[in-house]
Length: 353
Ligand code: KG4
Ligand code: ZN
Image (tube, rainbow, N blue to C red; front, side, top):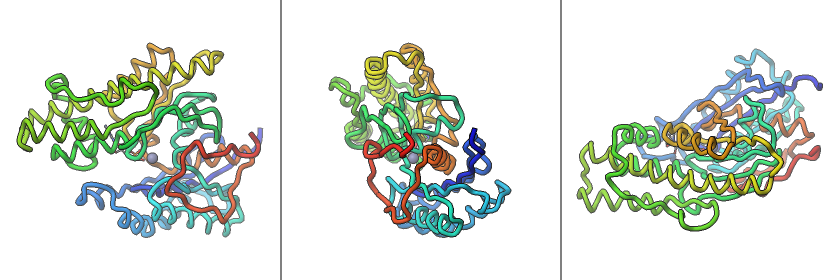
């Protein structure tokens, strides 16, 4: 077995500045996440300019702190990985340029990582999950169903045609006056709500395939608040609306997931007990976890949900994706560009695959 390799991972594509040191033997030596939530909260969402400035202010210090936590000099690293997209371009540039500087300074290879690949492979950092597996990625920026066939080999089964599911949670929270970030607030409100009092639409449910749409659901919530409550629902009403919204999201996700399981079974009939990985910030939602868990049981998939710290944006998943690529002989050119848009389907496997 090759010697243990150490990879630095930098994540700065949205509102977390995160740095981690991870080893090829799945040890997490440092994992620091600085959330900018408080800086964006007054605006009710992430402000790209503020995010980029904040990454610049904090990244250098966090890299130093991560190396101290890992108790290792920069020369102890074997590669430098950073998110190169997709995401808010200003933030991505900050992390990627820092990684290029470190790669130049240390003489170690640079690994420009697709943020979604980071989420897709994160489950393998903790669990023995073999390719291929089914991935449900539900975050503030993404909502996708994929078959992860290998490093750099992703087959997209479906994605959202408009809003990401976390974005819908955030917008509904805003409409209900529940604050930002909205997901946890909607979940808390829904806990004591009656999800059957209001009938909300289940977008795209009757349409074939695994694509999602959440913007109609969000509009339906807005209309309900205006029409039935003149924009001023009581606390109890708000809880019922939140519960109805969560129920609608759950119904849609579960049905699309059922179809994805069927496609997986059809195309990979010899995989005896495939894994279903759920990742992204919305994987924190307990109702959704429970419903997805039940579906996995019915479909005979083994459900794996990374701990929440690894589900939401973090540096460890970027370092780990770097470790996976490094092991296959991958490295990036120092001229690699940051990309605001970078679909997983455009990725290529590293040369050793
Ligand atoms: O993965 P993440 O940290 O960042 C992105 O890459 O987008 O996901 C953040 C999203 C936010 O939209 C947030 O509202 C949502 O995940 N979220 C939740 C919950 N916790 C976070 N949504 C529903 N229920 C939750 N408990
Ligand atoms: Zn993310």
